[in-house]
Length: 591
Image 1: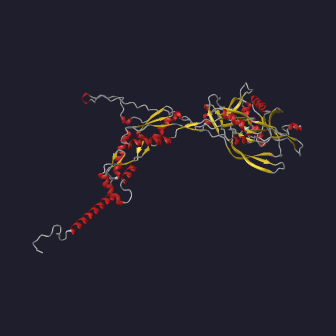
Image 2: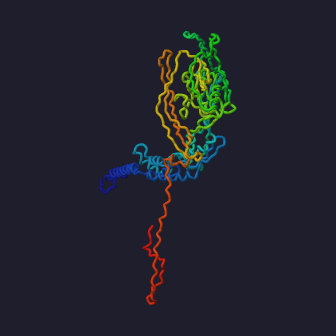
Image 3: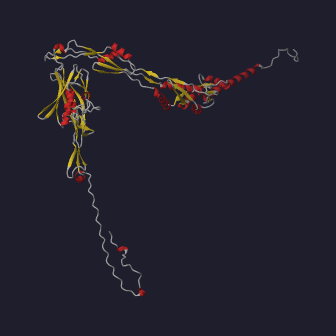
């Protein structure tokens, strides 16, 4: 072949032509791979939020997490301060909830923004960075809000106060054979947690929606809370009293009287109750269940046994004795069916002249004063002792302020109309009768109270008292110009204080102790003795008396000695003019 002849078209060969092209491609690929790896490392290690990431309407791209959090908190607090969430509640309640009641959770939003692009494997970090740089769509992070705590709670409480009401539960009372039910009233209350959640959602959606100008309005209604349903079977069991047949005691041959029972007609009671309005009172008569064998069937008496008895001596003024007699008359003859409660104040009534009472000494605020009905506490106290011995349930009792004196400490019961009562309940199986009377013997009046009923097992009660301590009174002297000089007068009589525990000891008919139960602890205050004296006798009775100090006597000033007259002097030797009454200061006498 001719060396100078050109090769055929398309047959020429360039020496090493393919090898440089492959090398360049490999280098470019390596550079791209390293660059992409660098982008991934940058995203992983830079500590900055990717570009085009926003929280709500705020672009936080390129910032560190702390800087974004501060920016979010500042920007959204300003935005929230300029808006309010409309709230309607109930039928016509309206309010505007200030945006300042909500606080942006800036830290959580900044953490969420920082995590954008960092999800999944690190190999995808670079791609997400490039996408964030060159794709115009922004990644929007939802901003959660928290309520302002006490401020929002207090605001909702003020708004809802007039439209809420607590639920009133159904209640019942029983008076002998009548059951009274007061139907409950539903309550109304707004769900605070739900209201806050709706308000937060409205404010949060407003901040996240670029198109909305104001938060969406929220409406809430109160939720009715119904009273608890009546458990009719349980109620029937509570009011039920089984009838007791009369029988003859084989030992005493006495007739043990019968007593009727009581039962609730559940179906009829429920019908009456359902027809009543909320808050309405329903009277439901209980069904009287007669015993199969009555007292009349056996010809016996109703109150054959003396269950308890107490007697006290009545002292004091004539009016006080009249009051004791009157109170005993009012108490006498009271009959209590099983379950009935005896209330002393209700039985005796108000202590007034119209009710037969007289003014007599009584304790008022630690002093002894004349008061209508003074002395009626002796009847309640004597009755208390009798009911203890009858082994009855004490419902309400309080001891006197001072030791009463007519009963052992711990066995008295004070009363005051409208404030303090004495009550006991017939918790025995049969009816009981209260007997109270006074007897005058040898010019001394005695009061006796008794409880009659049925003693089925022959058990009886003895009361024991334990003295825990005494509180000595003091003698106090007070000046009073109305007391003649040289004499004294006692204005307040003293009482020694004491503390006593009382125990109810129940014995079987054969004398075996069945139980010893602490009944009460009674604490009696001391009352100091007050003696009045004339102020002129203060040196005798006032321990702080200080005798007046007499005024000091004046010290006499000695009369100065006469000054001799100077002899005549010739004119040329004349002295200055001389005052014969002048005395040099150093010669004046001292006091």
